[in-house]
Image (tube, rainbow, N blue to C red; front, side, top):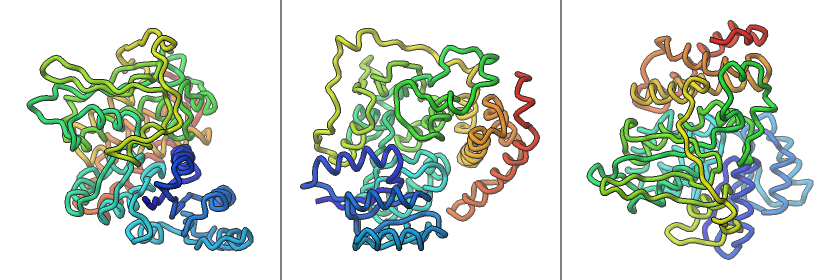
Length: 398
């Protein structure tokens, strides 16, 4: 029986994970559930899954969480804040951690799980982008099992030798596939006035708003390029991105002998999560078998770097190193939040990222505190740029 801490329990990854746990109650139990600020949603999950602990990130919501759990007659203990979450993740109440908190907010708990030697199913790509070096050190020191849950990295993990690695002598390229998002094929000038609602209408996947916007700008794929470099110890120039609108081929490994291995499946995150939960075994994930005849033809095309410059910015940052990727991630989070709030237009997201990268915001440093300080400086710089580019100026396309 694996005891699972699910961080980001009320999000799309959380829902998929809990579905799998419910399908295999003899193998898995949700012992810790954590959410950001949605007390009612978290308590509803506690009623169904009866974890030992529930954690709300918003410390001001602790009283409401505690009262709601008591009102529901649950023995689940209430906790609040990042310190409490990290303590629970590192403690003996779980052996497996699903890290699905969105953005840099998931960094500390990710490192806590890795440092405590837990099996870590990682869906929080931002923590790798910001601190891939620190995460790798923690995994190596503790013996933690790090299993990627992003569909693309999970696909690479399945197609690479085990333990997952990319030996320079046998692997030529790692190829990440991208759906192209909701705006694939549109020229840059047609993107000036797209709305947050349009950007969040992903054609294939059901995701949260932040990652949906990242998919629309192709920044999500840029972050995945950086993540793949750290996870599989591959330099960025051996990683490529191809647009594959059907989202059937999730990624590919190109070997030097001319072989190319791909992982295929319907676009359902339960496949990747199930592989991480059961590895090296496989379990029924409740996902329909892929019908190759119905899938018919599969398309592949190069990304449009002119219409979607965020992908190129991510490649450039990866070549510069972890300080640049930390700044890139911070600026992107600020810009996406501003777009979703109607403060800037869609095209300004990449402008804010590029403008922040052009400023000297300092070095990355070698520990978590220094990395978080760099993140904070970059966010302040990005916020300043957001204030300079109000929505009404978006009509001017560069």
